[in-house]
Structures are given as C-alpha cells and as structure tokens.
Length: 233
Image (cartoon, rainbow, N blue to C red; front, side, top):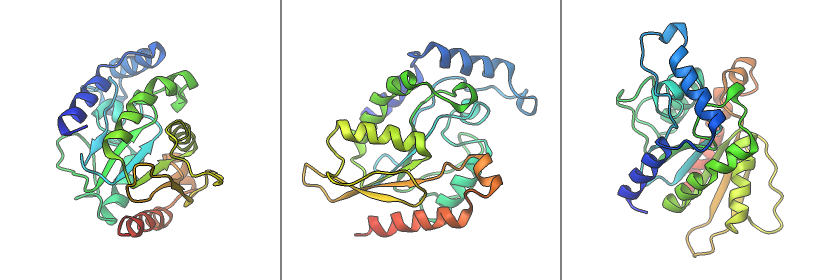
C-alpha cells in the first residue's frame, strides 16, 4: 500500500457508518457540543489515522474523545490526553512540536503514526465488542501498509484488540505470554524475513490516569526511550 492507498483508506474510514450506535452518538455530540466549544464546527465523523506515512512506530489508542478528536477530526487532538501524549512524543523526537490543538496547527509526526482500535467516539468511552470488530479491518490495513517495527498499545483495550489481530495474522511469538502492563514489551514474529518487531504497552494517557498519577511524564519517557533504542537496532 503506497501513500495514495493510505489516503484512500483514510477516506473510507471517514465515510464509515458501520456502527449505528456510534454514528448516532458522534453526530449527537457534534450537534449539542460542549459549551466551551459552542462556536466551533465539530468533525462528528469517524477519525482517520495521523502521522508519517513511512512510520516505523504505530501507536494505537482506544477511540476518539467526544470533545477531542470527534471535534477536531485528528487523533488525540484538542483534549488533555493529546496534550500529554504529544508533549511526550515531542520530547522523544517523534513530533516537531508538543502541542496539538486543531488540524492545521503545524504539528508533524516523524517516524510515528497514530491510530485507534475504534474510529468513532463511543458513549462513556466504552466501545462494544462488535464495534471493535467492525473497525478491525482498518487497523489490519494500516499494519499491512506500515509493517511497523514497533507497535505501542495505549491501554488494555487497545492491547487486547491488537493481540487479537496479530494472532490472526500469525505474528505472535510462540511460547511468549502477552500480558498488559505499563512498560512491557514483547517480540513479534517476522515471517517475511524483515527485521524483528516488538509490541510495547503503556497505560492510556487519559485525564483520569494522568491526574491520579497512575501515569506520569517520566513513565512515558521511559517507554518511548525504550522504543527509540529498539528502532536503532
């Protein structure tokens, strides 16, 4: 899949209406809006991936936030989770700036691409299993395009969804027990002879996790340094 095919994939994601519950929710949020954003036009559609089309690092989140990416149309953009994540990516050299508030704000990712398990904002941030399954072909197409050397799953839902997909593709290493915990990393198979790849795990940078101290900048810096070191091998 070349750059043009990735663009076509993203267009198909934006046009997706597979999940009636998610379509109704994302569009309702876009109509009602949050008071702080009442003068803004919400995106209100499925959110495509964002980043470097030749990335070696694929970052997988949970789903767009109702008043974040569902408003701005770009992954992890316009909310506290994005503020935390992009600041860490900038520190690690994966982004040219540490602030991402809206599309067109100049941020660019270098060697990284951000996507999600589910592309529409789900009620209460809890997608249903069938909704995750409906989105899985998009994630598989991205894995096929990038053949990333490193995959970073943000949170257990993203980690479990990624495992299910990698298992179906025969890319899990036999004998390895894949358990979600922050900072963990696991080998993935490379059946086509490409360099060894790895799956990394981190707590989701949700506002709840960052405000309660379950995850902090230092914890993310360590994970991203580990990924950087691996990509240099």
